[in-house]
Length: 317
Length: 289
Image (cartoon, rainbow over all chains, first blue to last red):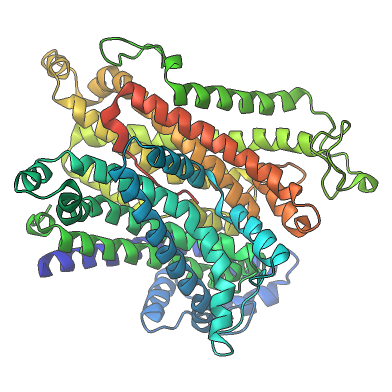
């Protein structure tokens, strides 16, 4: 397991470095001069030169890249050009919204999707199964941000149960913060729950026909007992992979859904940064998104290996 | 697609109910989109604020938007844009992904390892991140959305092509071709590719559905289609401000997206069942943007 973890950790670092290099090349090297890009075409040569120096652009590219990476490891992402605040601080403040939202959505989609998938698989061919899978088919097709708009119309505008948007800071009123995250997390969770239900159903249906379920039945267990004790645990393996992928896509989905609810999260920060041509801020926000995705994959791999010993014993590969 | 063997009885593709519904509905939406090239009830550039946010009526079947533009015309044009963006993204993904997948299966060894690692790497990037990167550099446009979703599609097609090729690789006719002196590339082109076409078509249908959703997300946050052109996602972006006054502005394009995506997914699922029920799990569920 240690060997496996080390190997995966190495993979994570390599992936992150490659991603950082691509982002760096794309944003810092390709389109000519970032300082001119930030200031626009009407800038005087003097102001461009001054900004170049301020941003450290007069140094060689490799040195800048190493400086950026090194800075990241010590939590120093540089200073935002458009807001004049350390990028690390900005991102940390926004993650206080984006991260809880993603996690809440993940929890919601799991507690809705998995039981429904199990139910559908256990009642395969029944009306409940058909109905659930039709719902899932529909759920997969719903754009999450659109669903968010409908939720606002129903629960905020019409029923006044929950706030239509905006965010109460955690230190002011934690309950208020959670209330402002409920609708966005529902919007994010629906399509994911639909996908999860489908994957869970397929996995469990596959497992139900397997030899060890037959063996468990022969041993005297009822079908339900056999499925609960042996089936679900085995069926969860493919589901785990999807869960990992889903967290990654939830992070991306969050960036979009934040716009529906005017939440001050990472997504809004990125779009503001793009509009302000704040390359430094864009660069570091993207790498944070990438890190979230890759770290999730890493954790998924570890969970997978933990749940399935065959994987971690297969050295090398 | 209708000539594939599906067991001893060879049902025609129309006998599969979900496939039939999916294909017919998809074709209807495609027709709606393509008609908009030559005709829409009103030109979508025709802004007439005095006509803004009109109810459904005989003159404006789906009402008008906040600028007085005819909603039906916008939906028609928007459907076309969404389809085009998603379709080009599929073409980008397939044209790059399939050869790499085939090459990985044909060559094996370090080449395969490299392709698989690049694949894993691309898999880790939601189209959104790619779109953000491209937009920062070149400004927002529908082309960005095509490229971003296209790049996202590459590993999906590479994986499907490699999987299909590996399952065919051990068959006798491949061995025969090898004995006849053909190289890996030539075998892939002449014998493997034609036999995995159905797999690729199924995946293309599903990626088309995801592309429609991804285009909507990207346009909604301003990274995709830009006015005066319109797409279903851009209509939702416009609708956000006015949804309180007229929910139908948001509901109509949203439902259109859902119908198209469900139709494509039904067609894809049905096609997969028809071609080979065992393939159900390949390229399972992935969210796009």
